[in-house]
Image (cartoon, rainbow, N blue to C red):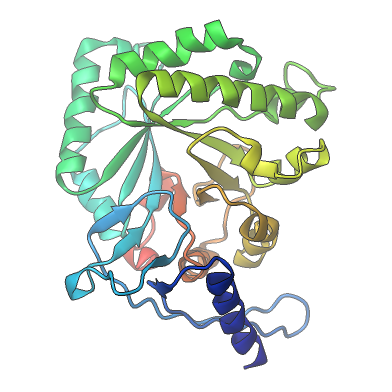
Length: 329
């Protein structure tokens, strides 16, 4: 009870200190109890229901007295990473599968295989465009995922204009938001085995700055994708603002952990320090030689992040579709 009272007082302080009067969209109770080392109990009450989506918004507040009628409030983002290969059956039934799991956003990634050219193939381009149009007609947001190799961190402005700018120009009639999935830490174990954060952090921030300029030139939004430890990496190089030093409109934060407790522990500093809008993506599908959330921890993690009003990304579609719908309710 003391913990709950403190949380309530903390929210009140933050609202008054900003000189604004706000009404809470989400109401939740959360209690922690530790038995032994890591036992966590929780409960939450989400009082909002809606078919309106607000991507990348960590704020759980709207102005007092300004609530839409019939409690038709804004729903936090629940995104899914969808990787489309040449052989992938892009059936429209996927949209129903996603919606049944409360997923309202697709991060759409086209994988160029040896036997096809993805977006460069006119027939496949039309196939992707038709699917995206259908998903949007069902009320979903769809964002493009691009620049999915770590070597883009080495490109200068002109090279990024050629790669990112050309892709925007090709797809700007379809997308207004682009998710950049350059994973800078892969450089450490790849092309430059001795390159640590002091090397790849400045390079990534320079790339982010250039991407910001290019996105502005084309009038689109762009989102950085980084692992949860990147916030600390940035601070350790002397930039105390951490992820807020990036130039994207928001940041998709990848977590690679097996339990809800580990996820919450690793994003604790992010929750208290980062102002920039962010999504926490949790790894559900096995692979990539990275830890995967245990099956019995999936619903628990989703519920805890929802209770904290944190938008969620689910990595990735293949694993999600194998799980019961009840995991995502």
